[in-house]
Image 1 (spheres, rainbow, N blue to C red):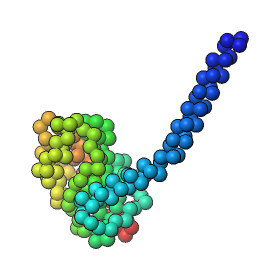
Image 2: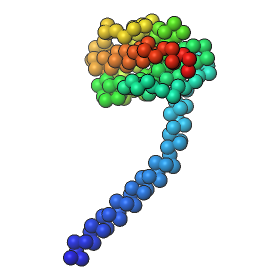
Image 3: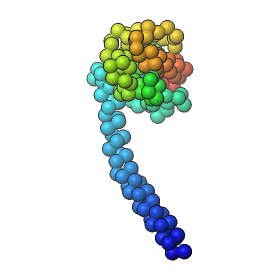
Length: 175
């Protein structure tokens, strides 16, 4: 009987200790991780719009894929969207909108696509420029050869940003 109970108790103690250690590690690093994420977002907004003051919105309007929305003091908006390319959640971009509601720029927060293939969506500026000036979600796409899934993921991300911006423009601009 003793041979059957001891391993169970030992395993339970090990699991409890491991769970406590993971909890302490999470609590100890979550503020630092949040601060680094905010700095990364701010630097990406700066690459998109230049040096400006931004206001983060509390809502993403419950649109799947939208992580953050920010508005500048001069009426420009940045929408962070995560979309699937070849890899799940591999495209994390910031879509910038000018005061008229047209896409004015796209910057990458992170890219988890295949280096040399899917990463071409970031490397080739002409690919990103096809989205500049759009005001409505579209289907037209000049995909990159060998990076079809990544190209379609970019189209999906831009369409998501356009959708959330167009459907909530008043709430976004009024903060």
